[in-house]
Amino acid sequence: MIKMKSFQYILITLLLISVSFSMKAQKASAFSDVKENNPSFDSIQWAYVKGIISGNADGTFRPQAFLTEAQFAAMLTRYYAAFQTEAGRYKNLDHTVWSNSTYEALSRFHIPLLGYENPAYRNQPVSRGLLAQVFAYVNGETHELEGAVRYLLKVQISTGQSPQRANLLEQFGANNRLTRTQAVVFFHRLHAQKKIDLAKPLITKKLEARVGSKEAQLAKKLAAQMVDSRVKLKEVSKAEYIKGQQLPAKPTYIKNLLFVNKQYPLPKQFAPGENKTARAQFKKMATEARKSGIRLTAFSTYRSFDYQTSLYKRYVTRDGKKAADRYSARPGYSEHQTGLAFDIGETNQNKHWAATSFGQTPAGKWVAANAHRFGFIMRYPPGKEKVTGFMHESWHFRYVGNEVSKRIYKEGLTLEEYLGI
Ligand SMILES: [Zn+2]
Image (cartoon, rainbow, N blue to C red):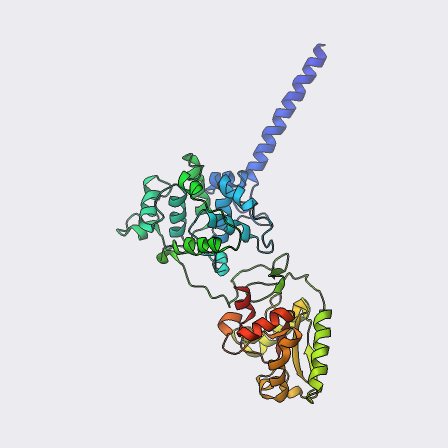
């Protein structure tokens, strides 16, 4: 009997030791680049345990990196249960862009953010001023910038960045980029002050509307307009590469169309080969062109990720990066990797292949005027470089199907404009 009891004691002691040991081990190892001597260690640890941050796949947190607006929106959604529940309702929304459900949810609460309509803002750093606007607003205060900053200072969620400055916005650093650590500390202070629920007016004023409906679209527009223009860090072009963007795990489909441009890359592993329907339609087009004495050929269609890599490298070596980016896509960003892009030329007229001059030849004119009848669109029309990201290519056609191609042709749109990107 005594023996049994002491055995139990030993077991319990062992258990306690192992529990305290594992707690300690976990505390020290949340992120490889956040050490215990980091002044914000506790806040980062708290955010990790709370599930507000998860860090990078390589086990780092990158504490001094700038937080993007989409990352900020995600933290906000994980912090407030009401946002989380709402975002859960949009889980099936175009899952290829992970932030869509988050933005859809936040728009229903009229949260001031820039990335609702122009997704390019989502990947840009967010300013401290915008955080102030959002934090004041979710706590039932004004979203107006000065008032919001004053509120954050008053309730000591912030102590300001440059207290010696006379100007309130400069004092707070409203126009400065928010680091990942700063964001976490702000959230931690909210929590420490037991500000854990959304202000009531936000919940009562929540918009109930179908995704894509007029009301839902309007809510996004108005929420984006709530952002003070002084805290917009920079106008972002929709036609430029996003710095530091990682290739996604899945390709993007919008309105059932596989979509690629300088902001919507493909996964490295995406290798569908040449599309069979597109090839069949091209054959039909070539047969039709023959009747007008034109012999068409598709001299470049599907290109693998690796092939595009070597092609792009070659162009950069020849013309420099800036020039190459105007006519050749970086690996992962080429429409040719979809198997739906066809570079069209005239048989035995190689001198006009992939050359602007093709557009001036009878064959080039014929394709420009007829491709839409076979489901193809001129993907990079003249005068649209700011929309498509590429200079005019009279030879590059993209298969989108007859219905869409006819509409795009008739209305003189680019694919971006048709998809509303
Ligand atoms: Zn091409």
